[in-house]
Length: 517
Image 1 (cartoon, rainbow, N blue to C red):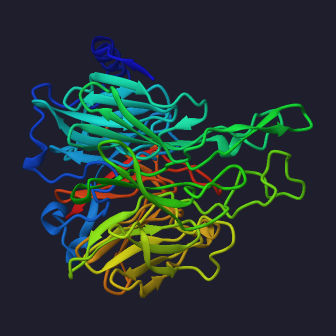
Image 2 (image 1 turned 90 degrees about the vertical axis):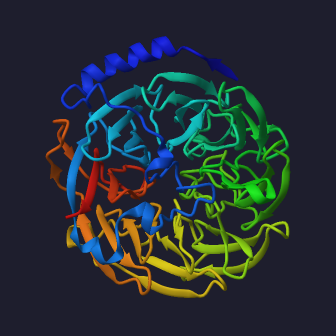
Image 3 (image 1 turned 180 degrees about the vertical axis):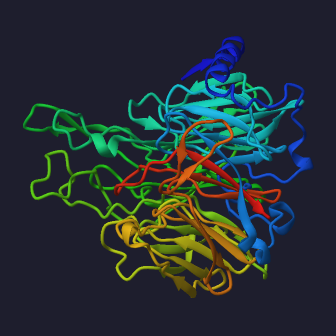
């Protein structure tokens, strides 16, 4: 682990970047960073420790009856970006967001003017968590080279930077979660793509969660999702050593349970056979020590690498290729009306699971949202939202569904109509967002939709695939909406648009702010 503490250089670099890319609309120099608790917020991926992705009426500032009057306030264009895949966060009247170029911005929520810009080492996909640090506030996030950062939320000055995993394919895609002075960082990997190459020593990555001191970045503990270290298992015909076990990446933001002093994650598939029983699983870890309290596997023996499903699989490919049934999104912690607490998790199989955190994750109910849950994954990818009654999930093949929390009964399913030009882009893989009475979903076709939480009827929609006049003068257009979902706080709906990802996603480079007009 390498820890760097170079705030003066970071300030200088940030100012240089600002002068080059943001000089067209800087915010007033007199602007002060207020207390986030004094105004509506959406911090990190799930808008709270439980990852519910639900904003109540006071926080949302938008009523269900008013969504039809949502209009564009401003648009911000990101220079050189093709994917706006780091979900925005909102705190103290500011919006924090990063893009695939590694640029991280702090914008004014009302006007889109720029407070600061910071250049991460590489592309930035994780949502940003804004939390108090001493007498000020810090912005925590990770990049696609497994670097975790803490910046001064007011100025963008770097407080610390830590490389949390030395594997060359390690990356951070899930938002770090901050709780009681610690930053919990999930670690995923791109080794699934490199593995089939017969010149590559496949496979050696293991997913993990790393706990860091929020003030200094010092590592407190690191827990691998696969306990056993990879060992040599023979060479391929090219003479390249092969290893196992591997996999179990953590793509999602940890869920924090203060009452049980636990952290919950969903894990990815294995890269090698036999698949460890902590892959495609829900894991609980002790917040203080990282000890795995319990683990329950929802799909057994799922070993998968990209490009292995052809007629002649490469030697490094698993002999029995799994269906790629990761948990791309975190389990949602929800206490029901009767007092029972459940963990609701959507899986790439198309199944939604309810687990019991008080009984070592025992399955309470399971509901299939697609007809075939055994075939190749991609059915529920980046996550859902819950309110007091239902959980809501978008589906990769297309459509949005609601599941009743108390018993898993499917309440409704909506298949939005697609424009003929978008027939090849039916998916709703991005995470959903809920407010009282309304569910927002960004589609692979570039359409943002608001659906009635009661029956799934589409109440309003907005096409993001168009050219926008931006407040910073950068040419901008929307695209597919994938890993980043819409967020709402203080009467404004913030929509990141543009996601290349997989399945021929449509690039885009814009952040939109809409309000009731």
